[in-house]
Each structure stands twice: as C-alpha cells, then as structure tokens.
Image (tube, rainbow, N blue to C red; front, side, top):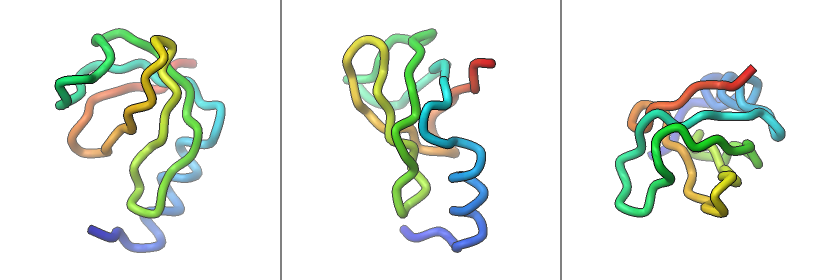
Length: 72
C-alpha cells in the first residue's frame, strides 16, 4: 500500500540514516527482543524503516504496527 508523498517525506525527515532506535514491540516471530537497539539504514517507498539491529537482525519497522522510540 502506497502512502502519500507528503507523509513519506515526513517519515524520511524523522528517521534519517544513522538515527538510533530502541524497539518496544514488533509483531514478528523473528523480531529482536524488546529493548534491542538498532540504526536506521533508510526509509523505503512504503514508509517502512529499514534497520540494522545491534543483534545482527535487519527486520524493518512498520510505522503504525511496531512500537519503537528514537534513542537520544
């Protein structure tokens, strides 16, 4: 499902490559454990956040489904 261009640009501005994220909850059997941190790689055309998790996983985050926060 495509999102509108304005919303995509907003997501890309909020989650720039290098942003650190802490996972709260992810709806995936292979998800990193809650509390795992990772680094944003990019935002794809669907608005999903491509990640490199500190545990070696690369599962993406889906806004509105997965819960996470930016680590300052």
